[in-house]
Length: 259
Image (cartoon, rainbow, N blue to C red):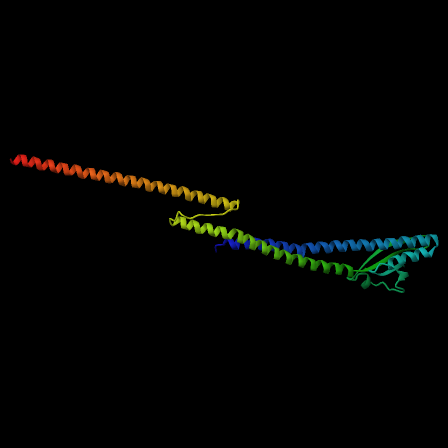
């Protein structure tokens, strides 16, 4: 199968568009989701450490207001689903009240939970904070739609570039091929015009110069042929005159001999 110039251009742009689409639809969103997940987990861990620090300060100083302030700080975060102070597997204080922390809750796919230790003379335990992943899901969905939009724009832009490139290359190349065919058939009056100074323009100029030199060469050959023909005609006339003279001399000699 012979690939035409049009198919080569379209195939090249199609390959580029496919690679770009794979990057924008799969690789880039996947990496962004991983980055969002990692950042979210760090935020949850930071919230747990902040609450644990506030509770530790409150317990050490005997000021329970500091501990409540730490809980209120976590509750102000809209993604927080629960905050619990746990010691020896028992929930001492929590938001919401009387929460039961089961493995299903702590290992849920829709929650990210992190722990931070609380160590005081009065209590040794930990703070567990659980946050909903809804914000990650929303960001991932938005990222997916953005990737789809970018892919569609890339396809449209790539198609427009392919059409423009095909048009800018195909037309002059076809004109050049047509001119070359006419030159090959003996028509040296072909005038090839291409005003853009690029590689195709250089090819046009080279073929134009070749046509002019070929025209000059053929003109020279024709002139030489005419000269040879004229010389041959003159030689033929001279030969005929010499033959006529010889014949006349022979006739005269014959007449003298007869007398």
